[in-house]
Amino acid sequence: MKLIIVRHGDPNYAIDSLTKKGWREAELLCERLSKLDVKEFYCSPLGRAKDTASLTLKKMDRQAIELDWLREFEGKVKVNRKKISCWDRMPLDWVNEDKYYSNNTWTDTDLMSSANCKEEYQRVCNGIDRLLANHGYQHFGRYYNVTHSNHDTVVLFCHFAVECVILSHILSCSPMVLWHNFVALPTSVTTLVTEEREKGVAIFRCQQFGDISHLYKAGEEPSFAARFCECYDDDTRH
Image (cartoon, rainbow, N blue to C red; front, side):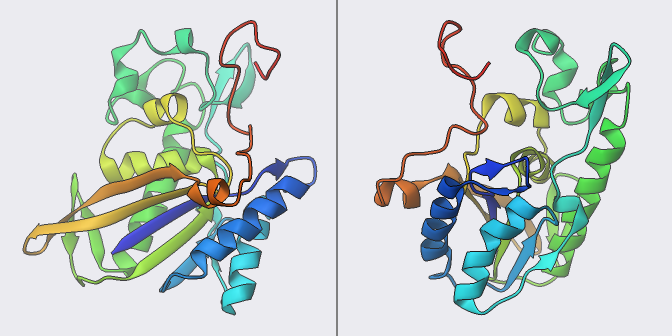
């Protein structure tokens, strides 16, 4: 089985859609994805993900199944009595605490247990488990029991933070590292493929993370969304 996770195009968050650049990116993505033999499409209910998917779906005359748990990750923490995102933290908020580096303990810290992170994380984990089980792969500890071995390709249109949650669950690693040390730019493509070297047992291997070769091929500059200043004195996003 091949699992493809696509981040939406350059976003216009004010209207939950895409910028003009985002629509160009989605068109280039469409040219790439429409060449694939896709068993099923799934999509976040949010506008920017649905708009990104729309061009590919229209060209292929297909529809996507909308899944609420594919919306952007809604885990929060409490800071000064305010609930804010758990997945956009400054380095010194977390890098010195070993618990953040384990998928079994990252939600047990004072900060992450201050609101709903654990519950939201489990909601997404349950969602991807149901989806993969429907396609023949039943989650069991750190691997998957194969109930229906196949070469199907499944595509998810979603968002960066929830993509990292999905990957952390499938790969048994902490999402904190993925959220803060990796970046999947708009319309990037992440590809995981099952490996079944023992009968009835599978793991997923990541062949590509955040691939934007479709943009480079067309000479389209990658979006800056999801990135921050390279150097502190840069006049870019802090």
